[in-house]
Length: 299
Image (cartoon, one colour):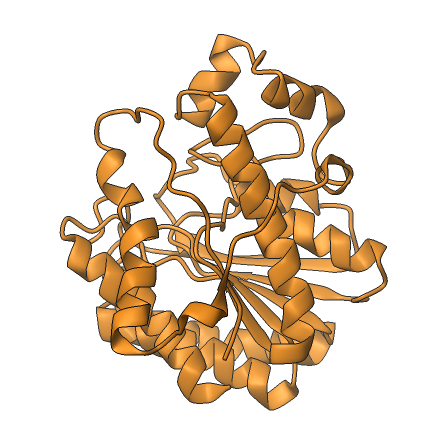
């Protein structure tokens, strides 16, 4: 149906408060299989990403420190996870998953990374639980291999894609578009090619009307031949780390809108999961599963 990159669950001890959100990486595939939205043959486990692809985006000094576990304590604290060989390997697999998904999208039109959406990773450092910027790495891979000429990154997570904005600030072949909560992290925003910051408690109507008017215009003016979509579900009113007030149904309509536009214009799209931190895991799983259900119905 459509390819889905799946990764080993990160087992290293996590800081208190961050163990619960990791459950979604295990439970979401189970839900998709149980309800028949996906089958076993849709899933694949990527290998570790070639460091040359990573170094096309991230600075060598930073990558050397990651791989050798020699990040200084301040830089490690900024990431938020305890640094380990297993964590770095998982991040490299996530990046490779997004690269492979992007390549597969040319055949299937849509693909998913069950993880990814690590948009807070800068060229020089990681932060906010993001070590490597998977969609930035995959974007550059497509450009370097002449698989795409113009890429549109549609980041609809509640947090600004600050790392992505920094990475592509001088690259005319990648257009970065981010919607996010105005008062949400990061508190110092970078400058994307287009940023839309919503006020606290923004509901479905304003959110959907905004993206329904903006994304078609971006497709018309930028003429992308590939789209990377970051489909975070932390825009929900129930989200502990978000300050918007969208419903699960509104989040689903957001996904449908993006996919309908990609289908209409025949633009391949790769989807990374992004954030989701509602108090009940069933809310997170339902909202994320809706993204896959929408793709199944549209493509």
